[in-house]
Length: 241
Image (cartoon, rainbow, N blue to C red; front, side, top):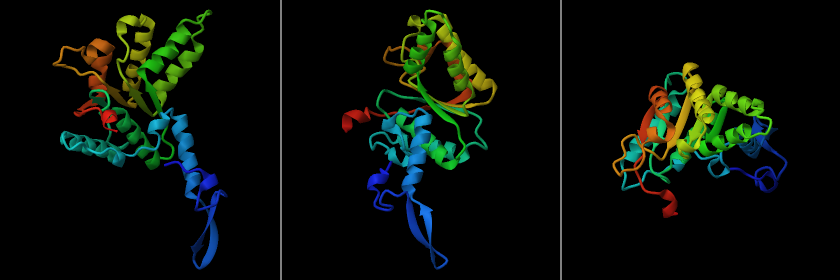
C-alpha cells in the first residue's frame, strides 16, 4: 500500500521517525519512504497502477475452483527459487478476469522486494503493437526509437508480457510479427526469464481460436521451450466485486 507522506501518522510528513537504539534515540527513515521507492520502481517497470503493490497474499483462491490453490503454490515456489534454480518462465492461460494480470504483477512485487537490483518491465500485446505501428507508420520510416524499445524488452532481466494474442495476427504486418518473435527468441537464447499471460488456450473445446492461432506457430513453439504453462480455472473476479 502506498502511503502519502503528507498524511503519514508515523513521521508527520517529515520522512523520518525517532527510534530507541541501545538506550538512545536515533533518526530512521520512515516506512513511507520505502513505499515511495517501491512506487518509483513500479512506475519504471511500467506496472499498471491498479496492480501496483499487489502481493501473492492478495490472490484468494476461489472456493469453487480448488485448483487455484495449486496455482498459488507453484507461483510461490517460483518466487522462492528465483533466480537460483529457475530455468523457465511461466505462461498463465485462463479466461478473462481469473487473475492472470494480478498474478504477474504480484510476482513482480514479491521479487522486487526480494532483490533490490532486479530489472523488471511490464508490457501487454496491444500496447506493444501500438508502439510498433507508430514506428512503422512514421513518415520517415525511422525505426530507431522503436528498435531501442524492442532491444530493451529483449534484455530486461524479468519481462512480464500480458494479453498474448489480444489482436488477430492477420491484422499485423510481417515486420511486427517478426519483431515480436525476435523478442521471445532473443530472450530464450540469452536465458532471460519471461512471464506471460493469455486468454487463449492450446486446445479450446468451445470452438474459439487457439493460442497458436492468435500468436503464430513460431512464437507458440518458442513459448513451449521457455515457459511452463499454468492453466488458471475460475470465473471472472471482476463480476464478483
